[in-house]
Amino acid sequence: MPAPTPRTTKRADAVRNVERILDAAIICLADKPTASMADIAKQAGLGRVTLYGHFASRAELLEAVVAQVLAKNEHALAAVDLTGNPRDALVRLIDSSWMLTNQARSIIAAAEDELPPARMQELHAGPAARVEALIERGRREGVFRTDMPTSWLVTVIHQILHGAAVEVSTARLDPRDASKRITATILAVLDKPDEMHGRH
Amino acid sequence: MPAPTPRTTKRADAVRNVERILDAAIICLADKPTASMADIAKQAGLGRVTLYGHFASRAELLEAVVAQVLAKNEHALAAVDLTGNPRDALVRLIDSSWMLTNQARSIIAAAEDELPPARMQELHAGPAARVEALIERGRREGVFRTDMPTSWLVTVIHQILHGAAVEVSTARLDPRDASKRITATILAVLDKPDEMHGRH
Image 1 (tube, rainbow over the protein chains, first blue to last red):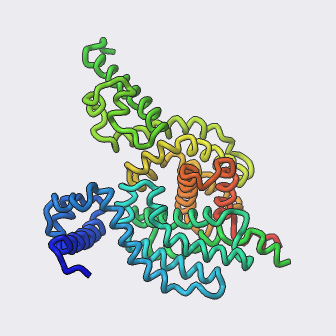
Image 2 (image 1 turned 90 degrees about the vertical axis):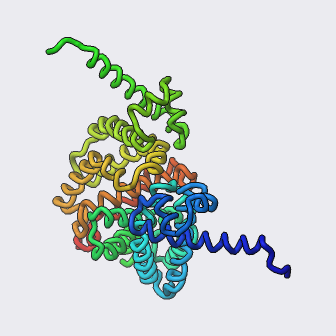
């Protein structure tokens, strides 16, 4: 291994600065989705030149913030028990997903202002893959509908979660009702439409 | 009535310029959602100073574009037959709404990049009110579910339509399948959950 050189020290500084910027951005945006680059630099205790040296635009910074929040959430989601009845497992996964979405509501609002919806969907590829695998299992086990592609069902779940976040932000949805409402809506879409029929 | 004065002539010029700008913006954004203020000024045959004189920012212009497109769509939606069975009427209204959403896909993508989701919902107050009234009637007539507020069901419909627009834009949804898929998804949410039960 080469001995530390000024270059690697500089790199360590850069990594530390990026961490400080991301932490500061998460604090600022959670407080105010319209927080500016200047607000974030001030919170991080760094100059604007340093900030722009790492993130050329607010959109670039928002991308990194969303990636960071999703990476942290990944731990919580990986801990959800996805075994057993796929419908019950989906309810557990949606509950956790909503808790995390609701916590990050202000950051999501900021990101949705700055990033195209298609980019937001791409950034959610990780959580989407987990939901997708569970839906696939539910389809194989005859619980979830199979007359629509799984990718569409995942999109609908994403849209319902994000719609609920907007509704809570604009006080049109009571956060205490949100979880039950979201689950009931998603299950109405996913449940096999001819389920009752099939039982006869 | 006062005779035309330089002031009213100036106002007529301003109205004409705004019309030219909005027409140009719709053409440019339909072609490329990232079209710049400079692109739009050029298309309108106006200077950038004139453009910024009417719209202080791209966000302001996008708001006016969305309002204009929605006002035009209003005629098409007002022509939809909403009488008779509320479920059939809703299918007709969703079909027309999707046709218009799909036509305006590129402008919606531009607007969603520039305007907060809550603002987009506010701008859709007109079409939302029409959907809301129809859902209310369907609830009174025992066709649609009543265990969730109508405002939530309207939000879900909005989110599904806009999610479908993103899916078509990113080529994850075939436009030929979209209408059927959207209708089936929305009806799965709106249909009374205990309908089959109720029949026994």
